[in-house]
Structures are given as structure tokens and as C-alpha cells.
Length: 136
Ligand code: CMP
Image 1 (cartoon, rainbow, N blue to C red):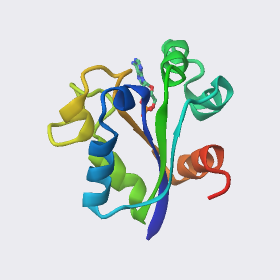
Image 2 (cartoon, helix red, strand yellow; image 1 turned 90 degrees about the horizontal axis):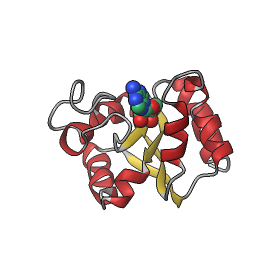
Image 3 (tube, rainbow, N blue to C red; image 1 turned 180 degrees about the vertical axis):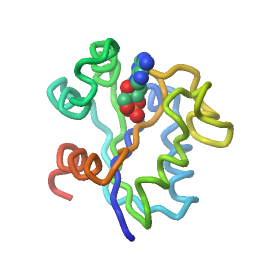
Image 4 (cartoon, helix red, strand yellow; image 1 turned 90 degrees about the vertical axis):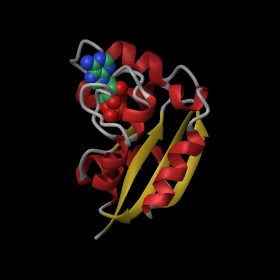
């Protein structure tokens, strides 16, 4: 079933010059780019994007980080795109959970600076895509 998912190359990934690496892996997997934008996100959008983490102790740091510089937002499309990108990304903790061969396993060390975000369910994907790409 064709799906869409929201991928973010977070500010750490942009700053480290890893945008091409992320896109190359998305494309090699067979997924398509439906929309793409380089953007420094306003705090209000970041708050809405991460609303489910509002009560977490790391919420403030997460907002600070995600608004700290440009990120690349991508609408990614393809069969089982949501799970397919999460497979490419690897687990949230880049050392304990992500395995080598995944983006986080290969390129990240800390959970906060874990390089990419991918929607975790069809409901999240719909909500996040509406927020980031209302026109798509
Ligand atoms: P992401 O997939 O974007 O979804 C929520 C984000 O919160 C996650 O990636 C991490 O960047 C961040 N996060 C989750 N858990 C922690 C944690 N324990 N400490 C710091 N940041 C976290």
C-alpha cells in the first residue's frame, strides 16, 4: 500500500553535511521524494510537531535543538513508507537501539542528536505532513 511519511534531517544532520547521505539511502531503498524543503522551524511548529513529548524532561532541550538551525523536511512516498523509513533510520537511541547499517547506527551517538525523524504511525504521518506540508 502506498503511504506517505514525514522525514526530517535534523539540524545536526544538515550541519554535518549528511543531507545527501540520507536522501541517497531513501532513494536507494526505492522510496520517492514527494516534497522537500530546507527550513529553520519556528518554535510554534516545533511544539506542535513534538506535542506528544510535552511532559518529557527533555522537551525544552528538544525544542531548542530542533529550532537551532536549518533542517530539511521531506515528504517521502512509497509502499509501506512509514515502516520502511523507520527501518532505514534505526532505533531512537543511536548506540543502544540503532544497529550498524542504519542511519542512526552509522552516523549518530546521542539520542538528542539522532540525525533524522520519521513518522511512527499512519496517524502521526497524516498529522505531521499536514503541519509541515499543508499544500502537498
Ligand atoms: P524523534 O524520532 O524525532 O522523536 C522524538 C525525539 O525526542 C527523538 O527523536 C529524540 O531526538 C528526542 N528524544 C527522545 N528521547 C530522548 C532522551 N531520552 N533524551 C533526549 N532526547 C530524546
